[in-house]
Image (cartoon, rainbow, N blue to C red; front, side, top):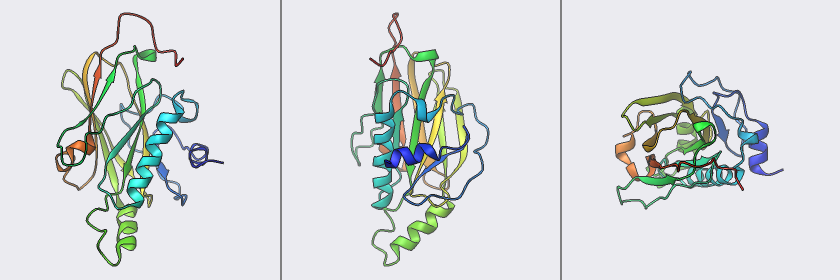
Length: 212
């Protein structure tokens, strides 16, 4: 059974963040209610490869003491973020030019525990594990009209990478911004190139994505 298959087999209730780790964390409470709560089943979403890739990359970052970087796997249409590199101070971008099914964008947001400041310590493994035990994350979506929606209290519960499914309902054409960061950190401003995704949604007047 693959890593992602095991992950899906452990998928809890809709608003519960799913931990991505080789060690299964204890059950955790559901995240606070949010308008971003997922309206889809991760295990049945059509774009499995995109979600798997995001999960794998996030786990790698966590295991290798990298700064917390948001990995996004789109679940219901074809699309992948472009990352421009550390130090560019340029947010990730993604263009969606096909009409979304049900006018909704489903995705998983994967966030690794930040360990870049711990990698030179003799006790780096213990320090990273302690941080993972306490880490909580925030996901924020800003609509084209400037309105904001948040999901908070997403607990790592000891996992080096945490995956949270979200749904952006009633998508509008224009620029939608997705951001994620650890609570208590420098936020998006501390690493804008890895914690902000600018999505340009420009659907044609025609049909919906059929995943062909």
